[in-house]
Image 1: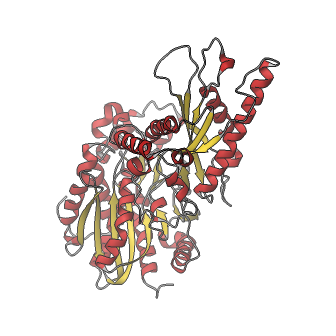
Image 2 (image 1 turned 30 degrees about the vertical axis):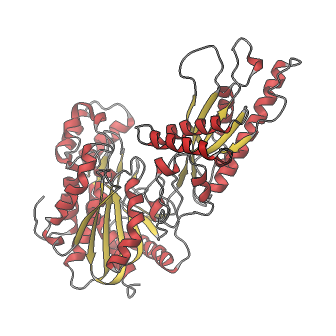
Image 3 (image 1 turned 45 degrees about the horizontal axis):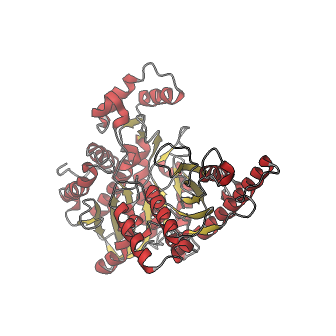
Length: 543
């Protein structure tokens, strides 16, 4: 990018947003792996950051991906973290326009032209937006390189001041679109960075994007927390039988389907907030363990579920999930008993036991645990998803336990994202008050209304930076088969537990070819809001 003369927030935010977008960084590609070092070099070439400390943090030895950190010092120890992710989803969905997907200024007119025969409501809205001149298109521009650029613009203005109060620590991370390895690594090293640079980290601002298909009022928000997400799983061990004699066994696939039907949209796992009704749980995957076709009923099955929460800790989520599985098994057996009438089946007379993964693990001998650990390390080294890795390891643990079927084994199959909210601690309360002041004065101060919401609606890196509902969190580690080798959760510093809010750009249709950014808000209003929040929080004299 080279050096550039001092400019206003708008000019810097726009320039950097386009430059970051032009540098491809699709999750899991060489572009993501090379982006961190490129980004650090780009920052180092900026004259305005000549006195800043800029460095990279490798996710883990040999990984190749890096967090990018920049410390802009003022006076004192007080520090605010400005953070966001730089990885994006793939560009393949752009079709003939893929070559322009990361060139916003070229893509925008080309995309507008391609929509001249728009038929769907989404395409028609995109056509109108692009014709208005208020939106700019591009893969990753909205989600979320414009947010990073706004944070950089604030850092640049801060660097130009004489003796500003406090410090800004900018951290850009990879892998948010996958397993949040970048944010989790950044959180892990924050205590060390604080000691090394004599920082007192007061708060973090996540810069993630918000989508709004309306007038933008739902996108111009300060989110004071984030929703949490867990992936409960159930492994069903049945009793296989020849399909000509189905009463001689228990069909694991059918039982898993009954569990899925019971949990789908279950109110018992729907956790709302005061302002939001809550998102019901939903089945994400279900499969039996058969390698191919034959006439034997499935011996095993595995199902995963999406469960979002605002207030519930993981231990409560798993307790509710277990009860629903037991309810489903009881009702399933009762239904089968009614269907066969007076005929006998030894497998529907009694209850079907439920074990948690940690219970099955506790049944293993040391030699068996070593075998299981070797399998876990092997599957983690491959390309399988975390849920599939969990299925394989759970099935092996079940076999090694020699427990009889039928049975159900519950646990978790992926990275835990905990809900966060601002606590009653002094700094968190001050951050909430500042956000409220920004909201109340937004029309006059920025010429644009801004609102506050208790929760960011999407899954985000806030779960690792923020004040999380972590009571009972240890139940996740004990019942996630891939906790050590797949998730690789650190023994310490897994959660930063600092007051964290989200203030990011708004636009529409991210993760689709119609992804577009509202430019005035992203390049003008957003940087000013970020600047004012940082200044108010770092300077106790500002009320």
